[in-house]
Length: 421
Ligand SMILES: Cc1cc2nc3c(=O)[nH]c(=O)nc-3n(C[C@H](O)[C@H](O)[C@H](O)COP(=O)(O)OP(=O)(O)OC[C@H]3O[C@@H](n4cnc5c(N)ncnc54)[C@H](O)[C@@H]3O)c2cc1C
Image (cartoon, rainbow, N blue to C red; front, side, top):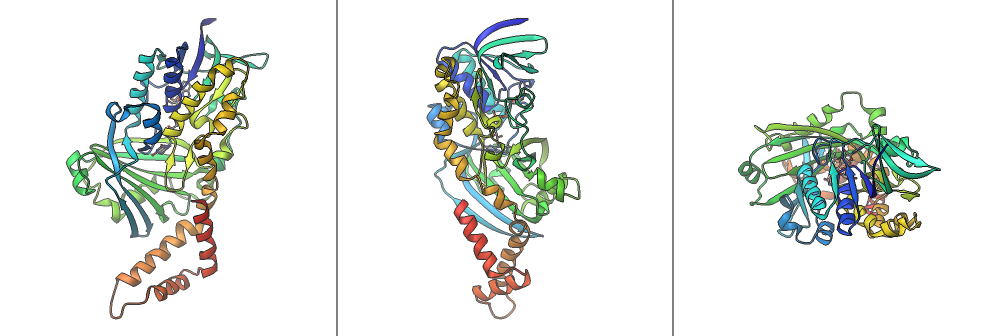
């Protein structure tokens, strides 16, 4: 039985679905959004950093309204091997990214969408897609049918509904990863003291090295107002082949590394969370992003940037919701490929494409096991001084010999990495 007909029915209340709901409702369309979580944002998991430019462009005045925790003024990158580490840090008072709690960010987007006129239902799980003569005409929530001119699927990276309904294929294992994280409450003052931050300033910290036992991709730490999130992203195909211990151990390795241990000492764990994410977006992306009666946006469509040193999904998801709303009228008039074509011509899509080989590079075991040791060996030769100080070149050659790396393979890997990142 149909409970009603809408211009658009959106599945999923993450950044993609909520942005689509907001922009469609703002244009005056009748919109329904169904989210299975108890409240908006309760099912969404991410690391913590959002690039601001898209939010600034799409939501004027967002800096004042949005639940921003800290503006990232410290970008840190550490390479770990054993207990050793080498760290690069870039500090600038100018910031282009912020940290925000995703639940709070989704609630904020949801409020905007509702104010614009969208109908949002939480605790509402879409169970199947309703088709007639192969055209998508609506969705089912249990036995109840919701009809719509366009069904927008924004169910995230774990796209079970899209797969079941034949809208997207099951993604190859090599294109996805498992991300898991722990949020540790330290208090506002402690965070600022330990990370050397002023009020509202934040740190974004990436980790690469042997703590994942050679499994791509790496680890992260973000500072929020009074807590930090520490997490690991593990490529699933490699994890299933290589992992010989429980994967939570890799997060323990990172947490207990001497570089981090004292920074989060005494903190109270307030949350554990895990979620699928996409590491190889073009491999994950379905052939068509829209068709008769449907469009897929955000992670479900593979619209996430894996830059190697960071994941960029939240702002790209919100952008895809905006593009969807811009192309809605054309689709409804029968140009179903309109969203697909427009999205593929955006700078966001180009950015995703540009970094599409990053994951291949991350898969090289040398990058995570050998090179971190090599770098830390060189640092040790330079800084652990007994008598005479070695020349940097001699220290590097000595380290290459010790780790059995030929200068040619190092050079070729360096060229490959610098071409892609
Ligand atoms: C560990 C980790 C770290 C990350 N770090 C970052 C980062 O620092 N910065 C960044 O920008 N991105 C990051 N990302 C990526 C980012 O989280 C995603 O790109 C972004 O959340 C995608 O938004 P979305 O709306 O497409 O999907 P999601 O946020 O996954 O939202 C999908 C929604 O659909 C709902 N849903 C699913 N199925 C149904 C159904 N059948 N019926 C009703 N509702 C349904 C879910 O409950 C969920 O609320 C990270 C991801 C992970 C896993």
